[in-house]
Image (cartoon, rainbow, N blue to C red; front, top):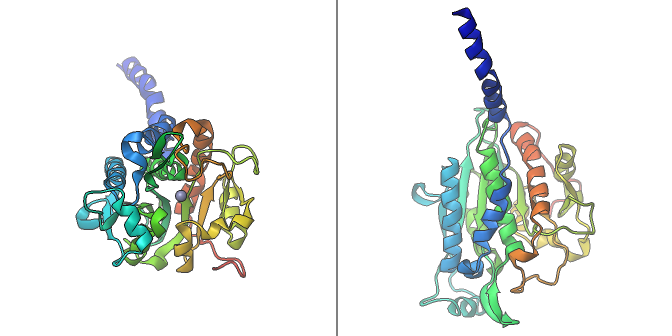
Length: 332
Ligand SMILES: [Zn+2]
């Protein structure tokens, strides 16, 4: 009898330990990086035109994934989708753009909001906000016979980063702070989804400890170390250096003359006082805002390296009571 007990114990011992380590150490899904891009940047989605049915489809895809991860919905009426009315009246430029897409142009854009509620009753009112924009330019002027502006790098790559961080963080032990995973619509038209989110946030804005926007991380930038990406406005706050200390493959923006800190969704949040900066590796490639921004140009090994490098630093940020702050003169 005793012999049989020890036999059973020894057989199941590795499984017990594996289960324990799995529970503590969420696993990053490498094939999922390509799978997300294969859908988001496919010709079927016709370039996820801002405020079009294609953007809506992309948003619905992300919402379904968030639901499967077990996140809490942060959108309208218990859903993950946030319907954001476009401003009325719209600038002529935007009206003409929308009219080129549909039967009656739409009057709304779509955000996706997923919440991983913090486990600690004291610190869960603090929120870490991870964002990207899910729209792109849609169908436009053909270049070399191709009229679909797929936006594989801009910004299906950032959207993929937010999805995969949501997937991995929703496994295992729940962080102490709340983590918000948000995809904005209509960034390309003028940040309309982002503006609506700021007026209808799922938590008070002053509870957001930090915002990391992921924008164009599909190709390495030879201007920085291999396997690294950069943070806009790195010197403006102590967020980037602290994340790098905890393992993030993050360095300073090597293109300050491009003023990227002001050119992404993070800027509107930073103007509201939130420590909000953009993670990118845009290497000033010639496919920017052209139909040739395609999946075939992406470096998936690189994407996997840099996105997965953020898992531990983000988990650290979501479990600490440390708060980033602007450096003197850094707040916009
Ligand atoms: Zn973009």
